[in-house]
Length: 203
Image 1 (cartoon, rainbow, N blue to C red):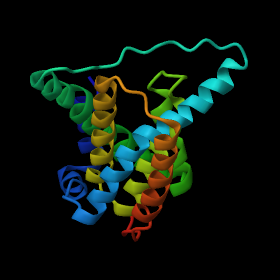
Image 2: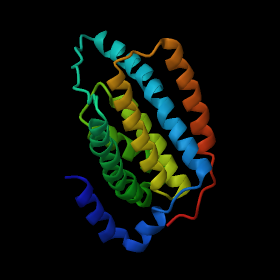
Image 3: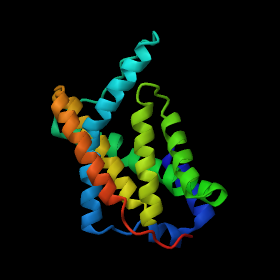
Image 4: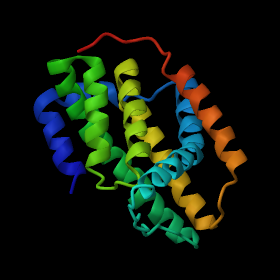
């Protein structure tokens, strides 16, 4: 429902050659940092959401309990990878970092484009409980797209993050505060290194 319209919109605005150039395989160093950042943010994001929910409940907000995908068999894990990780990552990155970010860049510049597309990314997930984590993800992926002029890196982060979250949910374990704090430190460091990549020529 999202991926096909996003692809059509992208091609109608930027064309096949542009898409081909932005779907080039990244170098292994950048890809490794993207994946490490994604995995660590599954825990760091949980800590952020915990603080956010504590803030909301202090005002009487009662959070809803989402339904998590919890695969148990190899076939279910394959389906979860396709339906909860790969397809959403490709579809959403085409729309938010491929189309919306670049339209906002042209109108408002890099900074406003990154934060504006991140806000829309978080808002359109329709999850008040998950909003801050989604907003942070949107910011990170927005800057990655701007720095590297590449969509494969945001897609890779997005896919790995989603699949790591599914795996943690399936394990039915609750990470300790120590693990969440350590993951937050790892995420902060890896993102800073990852996004220190040189700006490419803007189009």
